[in-house]
Image (cartoon, helix red, strand yellow):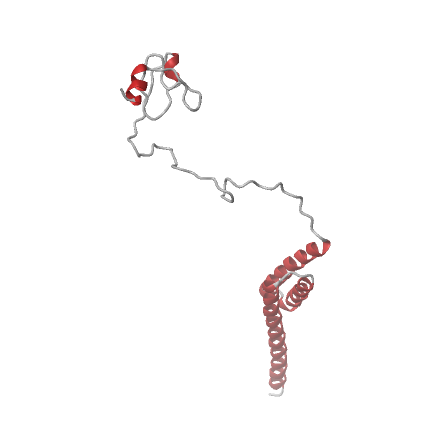
Length: 167
């Protein structure tokens, strides 16, 4: 008689590798999962899946190795300490961007140079402020073109007023 037929036919109560009995006292047949409730008067349930098939809700094999996303231990978080220079640089970057946007949209002759000033300050403190610098230059150029256009408008307006009065 083979070991398989002897174990399944005798209904032994010898524990398996996890300490649970391998079969209940009535000799219930198990397929795939442990039937712990059957020895306490509950009806045993059997797996419905075939060999090599995954059951619904199961995820297959999962290996945890060093450095894996969920298996790696995390170091305790140390409190972040910012230097005053880093805080000032962050403020200057933010201000250069805000002034650059205002310089392009509202008053370029005022906010354009302010954006350039704050971008320069941020770069001196070690933070790049490329967006604020570009918007500052665009605002400054628009402001200069606006002042030139205003001067030409006034000069041409005065010249046309002078020529009309002589007629």
